[in-house]
Length: 107
Image (cartoon, rainbow, N blue to C red; front, side, top):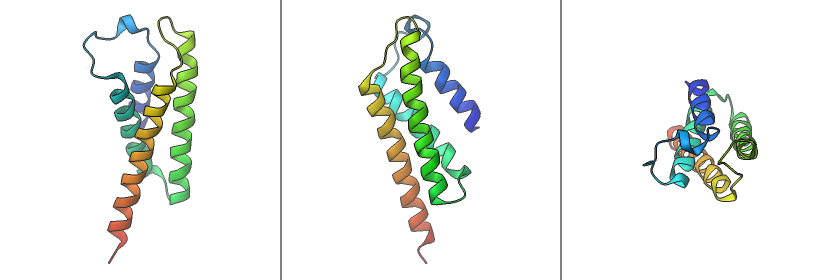
């Protein structure tokens, strides 16, 4: 599921704007939600909190790489606000996962 979601998110971020529907919701919300959901799919693959942090760091690095690659796509460019939305989605997913595991571990 993670691989399919990552491929779909990457595809959506790396196609020219003219290929996307005109009535999409707020771009920053889509970045936040997409990378947050991807982080929530990745975290169960981690065996420890350290591995979870590695997954989150890897997703942050991947989102930066995708933003850089957008400069090679017609009608796309690197956007720091997109990067901030990606990072916020990843961070919120990490905090939700941490809260869930902390509450779940409490007797």
